[in-house]
Each structure stands twice: as structure tokens, then as C-alpha cells.
Image (cartoon, rainbow, N blue to C red; front, side, top):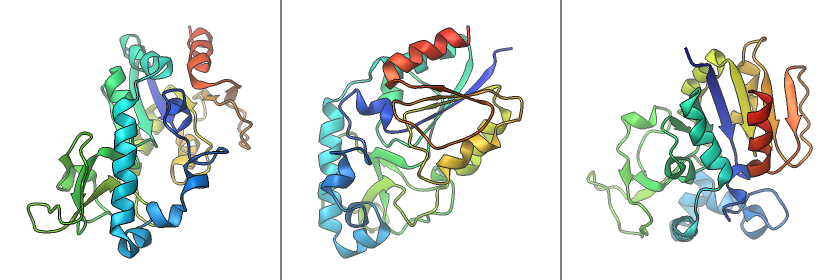
Length: 233
């Protein structure tokens, strides 16, 4: 049987594809107030601003391509039972060829009615794939409600976290790539790994996490993935 690998990815895995990170210098939160474009309160205050922000992000995503880290993760499926648990809302893992992906924070290329419940599994909601198209005020779901980005905003529940915990608990190896481990509940996922499960973290910054199981690979995602693959041979 193939070993099970749970891979948690964050903005750093897509940075080399030209997708802006959030907390680095020059990141999205330097340009926008998180409360304006990534919170339910911001949506209720100014829907047009929020729609414009995500329309712009979709345009950028349309021009981006999976990088060597995305591709290396996808190719691991040849030898391992891989599940990607991503904090990213882009579709670069899918485009690289990964087949089992849990999007904790939603997906940029999808929308849903603004009156949808946020405390249930996304698969139980009405979710529509719009690709890289724009959505505007007045674009309605079949139920007559305004469409909103299919994104988990600050202040909302993370419906897919239970599935992610289940995958982590069963993993033989856990890999964390390009995440600051500052956004919860995703930041606490590695704590659900079994005591005998080795944990590898690829990041080019120092992370303030301590666990005897953790092996740090201090590098960008593309180079770090090559180091990781050598270590687990």
C-alpha cells in the first residue's frame, strides 16, 4: 500500500507563480484592509468593492501558471496516496494535476448565493463555477439572491476543517509548504498528526513552531520540494 501524505499548502507555494502573498512586504494586506475585502462585515458594507477585488484576483489567476512546486506535489501521486489541504483560493494545484484537494478557504473561480449557510460542508451548498469571469452587483443565483465569492472570509466558519483533520490524523507523513501558520484553524492542523508521523515544513522564513517531529527545509517552495523528495526517498 502507498504511504499516505497530507500536504498543507499556503500562499508561499503559489508565490513563484506570481500570486501575491498576504503578509509579506508588498503583500495584499499592505494594499487592502483585510476588514474591507475579506470579512463578512466588509461585504455587508460595500459589496461592489469586494466584488471588484475578487474580479481583479481572477484576472491575475487567469495569467498565472502552476510552478515546479505544484507540479512536484501532483507527481507525488505516482508513488504516494496524496491529499492536498490548501489555504489557497487559486486553482494551481488542480491545473498542475493534483486530484485530491481540500480547499479550506474556498475557491476563487466559484461563487455561491450570499444567503447560503456557512457552517455546513461546501458540497451541500449551491456552488457555481464561473472560471475567470467577473461577477457584478445584480448577478443573482437561481434562488434570487446576490452571488458572492465562494470564499471563507474572516469571521466565517471553515466547513472543510473536519475533513482536513481526518486526513491529517491518518497521514504517514505530513508536509507543510509555504504557509506562515498564523491563520487558524489551519495553523493547528499539524497537531492532529500521529505522534509517529514525521512533519516537514518548507518555508523560506523562520516559523515560530516547536515540535520534535518537525524537520525544517528553509527554502522557497520550488527548491524546497526537491529537497523534500530526496529526504523521503
